[in-house]
Amino acid sequence: MEQRIRVGTPSYSYDVVVGGALRTLPSYIDSSDAFALVDAQVARLHGGTLPVCPTMMLEGAEAAKHLGSLPSIYRWLLAQGAHRKSTLLAIGGGAVCDVAGFVAATYMRGIRLGLAPTTLLAQVDAAVGGKNGLNLDGYKNIVGTFNQPSFVLCDPAMLRTLPLVELRSGLAEMVKCAIIADAHMFERMEAQADEVGRGNINVLLPLIADAVRIKSRIVSADEREAGLRRVLNLGHTWGHALEAVTGLPHGLCVSVGVDFAARLSVRRGLLSPNAHQRIRQLLTAMGLPVSAQADEARALEALRNDKKRHGGAVDFVLICDIGQVVVESIDYTDIQTFVLS
Image 1 (tube, rainbow, N blue to C red):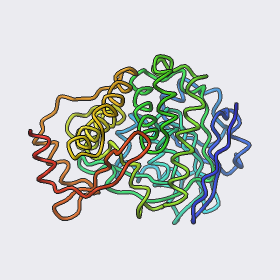
Image 2: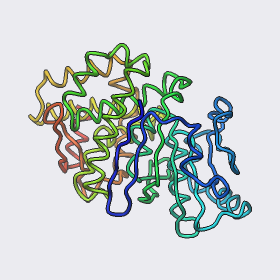
Image 3: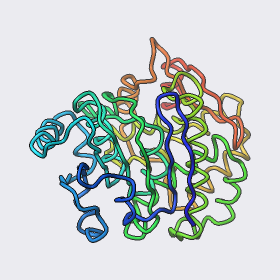
Image 4: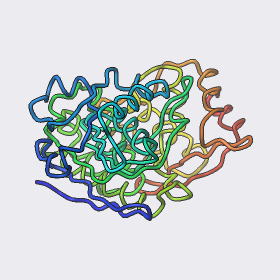
């Protein structure tokens, strides 16, 4: 069943349509003045449902998320006649949404943006909230903009063709959302862990809507991450460091990062060992990792370059209980001691 979730920010308000079909995209745009960036694998699998408009394929997903990929996109838009009142569509995973968001924010100082995320990770995270980022020299999302879309269309049918690793990457973000703000959502995921882990669309759909509602409330209250929005970084601080040195998929690194934050929270007396055990059990029940083989010294060096570092400290999202988190500034040396202990 289709659900419309409103994201109301100071710069722009729009709907995230959870359960909408990709074939309805033409009703959201003027197809005569729209241009699409499409993940090549999505085009191979779902080409018959894509809107008829000038289309540029992006191969390699995450490999496209860097500044060097942009000139060819800008030149293509110019050659196609895109102007300030045109719409740029992103049809693909989080990397495609990030690239399109950045391009739409900067081409001719800004054009309309529409997102049709096709991975679970993108539907519950990357496509909601207007934040996009490009990687630089192995560091995640160092360059980016805030650019709200005009609409987000989440088609659950796209999830049926996802590789298992992509499904699990999205599940990690959903667990993160539940830990941040919804203990009841967490309980439902615990009760349905087998079906969720298998990607049962009927079970997933209401949970996707819950995750989007959580993020939309937070983004609406803090569009540019001045305060509250920082809680959405749960699992990402250590997760991004692991991603930089291991090359593991983003969502799997977030899963390890969530467990890392839980362990750190227990160490600092914020979280009960029982709550940490519940978090770890849910992650593992859905096939998500809670540890990763990594060069700890290199990961700590990557942490030094995290966007959330200031001076000798790093902002970390810690867990007080399932459904309640807090952001604390922790000395880098304390984190180093914890990692190496």
